[in-house]
Image (cartoon, rainbow, N blue to C red):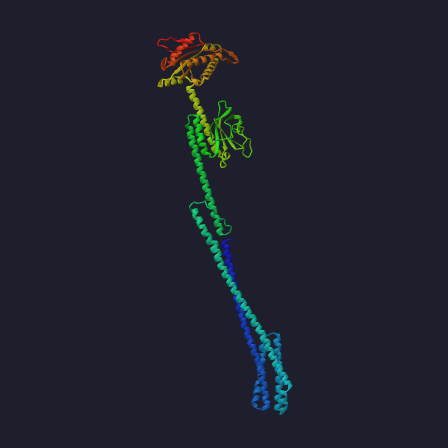
Length: 600
């Protein structure tokens, strides 16, 4: 109940009790007045009854004394006492006017009748005496009739007094009892009024106001200090203090919500900062391994507790291979066909194993751990995949902000595309567009680096020329010549492998530079190249053409000469091989200052 309601009720009850107390006091005073009136009536009736009795006795005594003594003074007194009849009548009239009960009124009437009969007897006796009949007068006054009437008169007066006394005393007792009752009721009501007042003071001011306010003071002080870690005790009362408690609870909840939103804002800002830092580092990467390292470093910070992998698409866009991982994801394969991922198929993020409401990707195992696949695209083409899986109960990949996922995926995709474009541009700058081998510029740069190298490394240069290349162009067209060049270049590149580096020197000439091998090993590599080309069939437009053959010239440094003359010496050996009939290897190893070229 509200405090205002309690105070209003208390005020109303106090007013009602005060009115009732005043009414009780008024009724008590009225009962006291009735008691006093009953006492006065009792005294009056006693007095009137006394007067009736005394008046009758005095008249009788004077009449008897006159008859016995014959003295005139007694006759005068009797005559005077007869005037008491009018006073007696007045007294009877007074009694009648007091509104006494009928029983008492009948007794009064009887008293009046007896008094009148007694007066007549006494008047007759006086008349007998004055007429000289003293004996008759005495017999009348002292006879049985006079005695009977006098006794009846006195008995009637006694009866009246008894009835009046009983009635008035009962009235006095009743009035006194009512007065005492109303006085007690007034005292009880006053006590209740005081109790209500004290109860209101204790219950409202102390328990409902003072104590809750003292408790709320500490809470408000903590709220003022932005401390929302405490719990507001529940208050079920529906009053002003309860509403204040509810308001404090709402204020605390709002503060907690503000703190939560502020933490989310800070976390969101931290995430944005990390994404921005990652974007800057991605833009500064020169190689894919650097990009993979950046992704593995920053993605776990952006999405803590979520493991993942970075996959890139191969050149044919048929398969993906893992290039980076973080927090050890355990439920996906290191490589898989592109068709095994529904995210790549659909071109949008795909969630697997969440409430079993969608089909899982085929590159995941059957553990049921939720996984999220986010395709990496650039210029509308898929070039890779970001995979996330849950590694803790506090992190869910499916709950990660989709905007951030898409932003990260877009930037990683663009970074990979930029690296590939950079590699392609660099390849165009250092490689031959037709054969894919390093170009003449790369060869010159490599030779200059070897010339500047002061470690005296051994270098072998192999010059290669395709035999009768012009015939292929004349007979089958330049497209066939291009295919021959690509065919031979691929064989040379595969045969050399890690032993050296293949270059296109120009036209149909190729060059191989190998370091840190002996002359014999170099000669063996040259022979292997020539044999591989000659023994590998070549087909053009569905028909076997060939066989193809190459002429090879080989030179070395620094034993047989400096690196500055390496190309010239190898080219001279190649010329000797061509002049010697082609499809052979000639080495220009200097055994002396004027040693001739040897033919192998």
